[in-house]
Length: 239
Image (cartoon, rainbow, N blue to C red; front, side):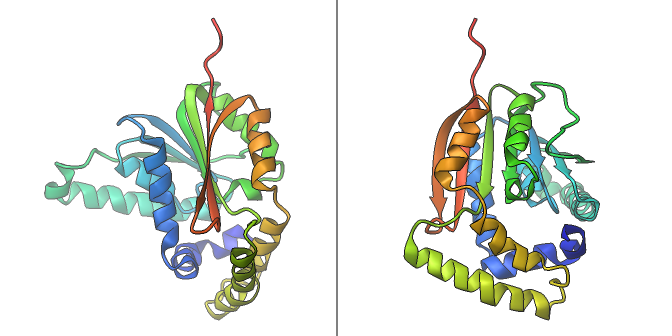
């Protein structure tokens, strides 16, 4: 399903979110406020928007996803960004060199040693993992002590007005647009609202994070709670 929509994924993200998804990703990067050179795993990276943004901010990033066509689109995007950076001396003096690699991986069985990353991020992907709690446990495992996990995701919206608008848009408008641009044959944009409805509440998700041993830090509603940013920290082991 995700492989089929990969060629039009970026276009639809911008169109269907009115470009707000970019602001949500910028907020994620700003909230973590990582030092330059930090090692970041962007899991369920899709076509690489968040991974690339972290790399352009000075992090050393691994973008990982289960779906190969998504990763192939990410590789092309990353290659173009690196080429643009090298070919524009005026910007390269002000921006760090892009450090970015890609890997096909299962979020439930990450091919990394314990304590490999300063931060792990997932943008709109944990909801699609077969066992989200196992995925969160893997994120906790590969984090270094004091490392942070940031999850940007859609959740059932508690506010009835926003919930009604969201459901109308996602149940009626979104599938129609996806059909017009020929990105809806596998039902991906019918799956989206259904997966949100069936996902954990924000409170339950916080409990999932804490259940892995992470110290919960923040639940930030974005755009009226349409999306939420969760941040938790891996506590150092007691000496």
